[in-house]
Length: 290
Length: 260
Image 1 (cartoon, each protein chain N blue to C red):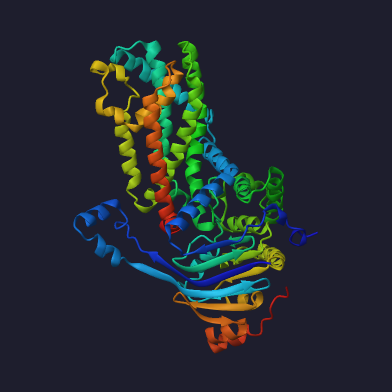
Image 2: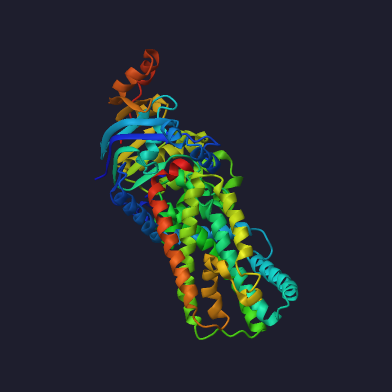
């Protein structure tokens, strides 16, 4: 039987409901459409996950260790920086290394999301122009991809914790809601920067340099206790500091930090509102921009 | 029952120059008070102007017109990719758009991986994706190549993969650009058979092409676009008679439509 006449596997893809697209520009309509874009991305979460998996696989295709290069390079970097800076800052290595490991990993996660997020739509131009799909899917892909990277680095955290016998404190449970907040923030950050980066092509390099500055003013390599008098002053307003603190504190055995949580929630609400507004306003123009 | 309604659709493209879309320009323009003037005088292209028609089950529409008439823009708007700046588009029924051979495929991934992504996009289960991969492998005849990155394919092979993938599902509304007609003769024969099967299954077909012969064969209605507006809308022979020079029309008018 020739293939052309055999039964096509047509039932594989379900039919779509009626779609009505209007040029209506009211705020209510725009917010509603942006919301359904987000729920549509959630419905396609298996696709998002597979895209992220393929991204990682592509990056290391043909290499000997594959994605475990991520683990290895993180371990080497943390070992080298940890040993050197513990001496430079006159720190006790058994306290400094766990601090550095957690801080650096969280920082890599969020700063890579920011820099990759700024190009998440422009790099998906092919997909965007060939079929109708939710635009927020591309932002979710960036978060999923970096979640996979973080998972590979988890081994390093476990080894460092075992080596220096770090025991998470009684507030360790709060790491779970804190991480959910991180995922939401990562998605919103990527979505907002993606849209702005599609419209203004000099946003991606700006994001890169802003993140570089933020790296030095955020307690990642250095601990606030190293400052004269331990006073952070205006640096306390740094949103990255609050976000990192709600993850790092409980893991290093400290209690719940109410101040850091309040700030983290405040900045996250601000980011979510800003990001959703920008996305709702520009969503329909995205295919014309990329 | 599929239905596709286009009412008074207009699309304007903003023309951003390489520099004018940069933040620097915008900030400097704002600082020197020229932003307002800029946005009023912004260069736009009116790709579509007040296009209206409605299609119901059984309609096989051909879009003709010179280069730049807005055919591809209209196809993209009907696929829901470009949201119109004016008017309304209503799509009822499962829609597949075959706009370019690449079909949004990632050239660095293998053929099979791209098929898997497409299946996931349609919400297919693991078993359905395997069936899809088998179906595409059989029809495209790409065999072992499906395990190699799409980047290594010849352009003909990409067309075969894109075609096999897109026609492996049975849409109610099918939108096609003329790239489908590239490919070697052997494949073209099989493609035509399969396309006929799909078109028979599809309730609505929209085909964009320069080729009057193909229009006579496949379509029972033609829309002639020019300068982003509908210049004529009617049965193929009537529209082609106005569109083509008389000697060329005499040639194609002898062609009989494909029975579907």
